[in-house]
Amino acid sequence: EVQLVQSGAEVKKSGESLKISCKGSGYRFTNYWIGWVRQMPGKGLEWMGIIYPSDSDTRYGPSFQGQVTLSVDKSIGTAYLQWSSLKASDTAMYYCARRDYNDWYFDLWGRGTLVSVSS
Amino acid sequence: SYELTQPPSVSVSPGQTAKITCFGDALPKQYAYWYQHKPGQAPVVVIYKDNERPSGIPERFSGSSSGTIVTLIISGVQPEDEADYYCQSADNSGTGVFGGGTKLTVL
Image (cartoon, rainbow over all chains, first blue to last red; front, side, top):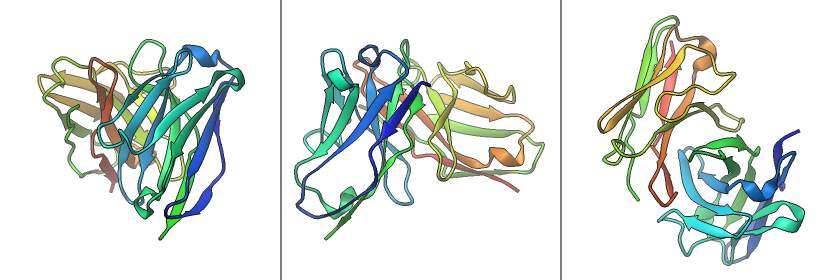
């Protein structure tokens, strides 16, 4: 089955670091860009960034450049979203999603990872 | 990057036609995509490349494009179409952006 499986919910404190994961299966992981999308409580979807597993080529949305780090371990088919110092405003649902092979939309989504950060 | 602007809400009665617009300066040059997002679920693309419908998406979903505005059209709205809808686009480098989202209410 073609799917993206995300890591479980996290409860953290401000200032802590965090790395959440997204494992692709059922398809050639290195051939498809993986993106991350944030949804803060009661708010809309925000495009955070996208990474190409084959060579780690990365694009960040303007609001997220310097705030998070995208990475991959292609040997295990897993993408990561990382924070070095969390803030309460990072509390949100984070989705990973696969970019369509030929176009710039997301054709496959994970179920989301809920990150809660207390101050 | 650039912005995409959507109306916050649209309301229609079952069986009517819903139209959700998305405005963006770059839309004449870049494709738009539409996602349906229901609570507790992952988003699903319902339209890609302005007006193409993925397999498995009902025919009542369609899209149109005119200059800086793209429109998602849902003909014969069903109660199960009640959801948030987002337009999305990307620049030439592949950096993407979502619109603010439109809540579709089926009265």
